[in-house]
Image (cartoon, rainbow over all chains, first blue to last red; front, top):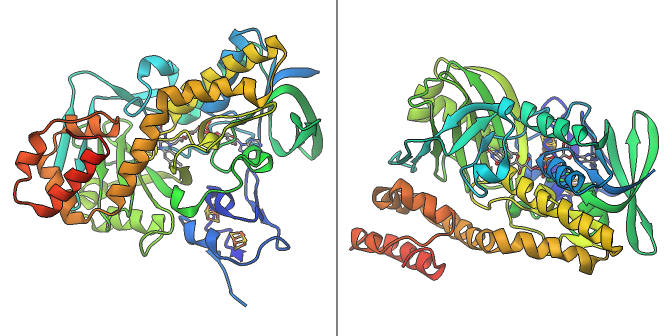
Length: 57
Length: 404
Ligand SMILES: Cc1cc2nc3c(=O)[nH]c(=O)nc-3n(C[C@H](O)[C@H](O)[C@H](O)COP(=O)(O)OP(=O)(O)OC[C@H]3O[C@@H](n4cnc5c(N)ncnc54)[C@H](O)[C@@H]3O)c2cc1C
Ligand code: SF4
Ligand code: SF4
């Protein structure tokens, strides 16, 4: 999954629904632990800005 | 230094927990990852209409922007349901000031505070939570306390690490976007406006909350992942294309834009563990329909702080002892939350046309009663005579004990 930082407003919605706890929220942005992420796409479905894209391999 | 309470999060839930513990003589530390508490504002800033009354909240005077005496709800075809009292029953506040003032209150009562402190882990000792680990200005710090309180909001790290809420199901989340605007063509400055409908805001609503004669929060919350557009997309659609939205916003200039997430799937099954309590959004103490959570966070936080100090004084901070908090707050709001969750699920399945029909027969008072879980009278069924779909909805409402 990829986050477009220009669109992200740090609402932390994606992090709170991620079943794997892969997204960490900081005051000014997010980091994603790609070792934990399995590209399930749940986070992308809740983003109010459409900032997340997930590519299924 | 070993604290009585270590509170993660300086939102209304955290500071109210602190204030009540401090009043009971506690030593308290509050940590927040923000370097500027209260900013950014992720809130419609309406206080006092759902849930706890203004008397229970003790709103900081400096935070009050605009008194509110009612609302207009617009159904999908813009049929209005109006509720207007003679006196103010709520306020639009400035959350930047609101949250800060509560933090100032806590400090003046003796709380220690660390801002810019991002809590990343919990410290366990003999199976009991006994501290937190935070990253603060490039350093790792550990803070110990008798009771750790997770008041860290929708994406609660404390809830996740303790296992009390590992993640939120998307359908239990609302995602939202909001502009604060100047130059809004507000009709009545002391009435809030709400817009419903599957095309306006799937399983949610658009709100227009006036902050002054020409300044308002114009925002939206939608069921996460519901509908074809993003929350931002629906909000822009309202502003540009909705017949009323267009009129309201045609001269308006956005001075702020924010996104947010609201946990409205009801409270977590459990909000206490050995040495640990959850409060506010972290606990899911949010009205499942309105998404209002400030008042609940404050009242539940006050209960949490008091119970925590009682338990510390008795030398027992086990889950069993702390569960007094859980019973006390559930006694107040547990029934309301579960009933409103059921109502939310029902409304989610209700067609727009039925909502339009419902808007024709409901009074503003009816809506207030419904969303407070109070039964409303039989008048409705007579008014719905012959309308099969509407009668079916009313029948469901009767099963929920919301009408007679
Ligand atoms: C768009 C939107 C509109 C809303 N409108 C209204 C409204 O009009 N009226 C109403 O009553 N409610 C409204 N709500 C709900 C309301 O904002 C929340 O219910 C309320 O803020 C909950 O308070 P809290 O103290 O539990 O959490 P928050 O106010 O979210 O505070 C949590 C704090 O914890 C901090 N934190 C989080 N994680 C960490 C960490 N790991 N380490 C350190 N600190 C951390 C955060 O920085 C934050 O300051 C709205 C919510 C949204 C998103
Ligand atoms: S849900 Fe979207 S806007 Fe919110 S924090 Fe995640 S990427 Fe950013
Ligand atoms: S794609 Fe799935 S696993 Fe990866 S960050 Fe998003 S929700 Fe988490």
